[in-house]
Length: 463
Image (cartoon, rainbow, N blue to C red; front, side, top):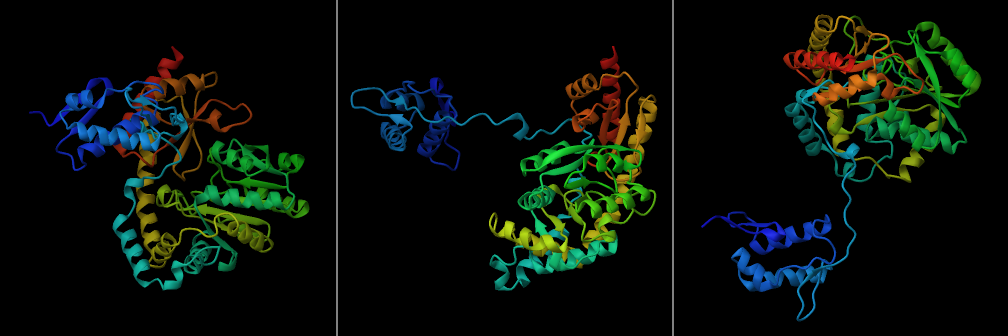
């Protein structure tokens, strides 16, 4: 006899080799069918005798399942009448934006090579943290985060990014998104209403800032970075910038504009939010130091482990000017109370043992090779495309020939299984047609194959 038997009208299948009991399987499948709307309200179900015969189980088993689902409100049971499906709130289909999708050819510009995450070394740090942590570390603790991590972090950032701070000014957050949302909420509570954002700039981050309660004012970006003259004209209460490697254009804020930006912030009594998202990856020279090191009381420095290690860690940080420390701490206390702590202790150990430095040295070599492969493949397959941006980070800006329909290129590329973004998807004002192409996730052969598919897409879009 087959291991399973079916009641076709209910699309129920029982597996006698499964660890779950037959009654648990039947109950779970019927409950899910009602919750998801596959069994509509008012639908008549087979009698207990008929369903038992169809499934080859005892009638008592079906009676028990129907009784349980009736007690829970999923079925309407009346003596002498067939069971019917009750009316309940049906779970909606998840929105497309919330569903995970893995493209066949991944050229996304915002992801690191998460397959290279040093699992064994991280596990060593996690075990060490768990074993050595005093009992007190298992309490809520300081709202700013674990003291050990804040101390290790400011030491690391001072050494590699030129950040000037103490642990008292450091906050550990659930990734960059929470850090910028926290900062914007506190600025809003201070009475600040507007924030300048780079145009183009990361669309998701722009939305996070808006939902935190600040009105965004777009400020154009050119080959020297954010246009400070345009910023002065817009006169926002704060500004969010990516000075070491602008996203998505890949330019660096020029020394002249760095000085003028800080002068403006001092005159305007404005806060500069510095998103230092991938500065550790510079392949042609040492990266420029953090802007925060020049004006620690004007610049709020933000970063995360998402690009250096993996987004799943949800570890971010905010180095705050002195006057914002108390309101930031109070905001954390009255929202999340404290951040998850064990991963913080593990990261502190990871930093102190030099594991992040070693990982970054390995990844710089890997990413530089992959960038070279991407640029060469573009030159061979799409010589009309201009690659822009410094040799840094995890992506390049590939500018398409004038007149190219960027939207159509994106459509054709995605039809061919390519994961990528268009410049227009991150811009407020119209820009030249261009693509954001990442090289971190895919190995060299996959990058070449992806560019071949991209060439097909460009050709199809121009036909």
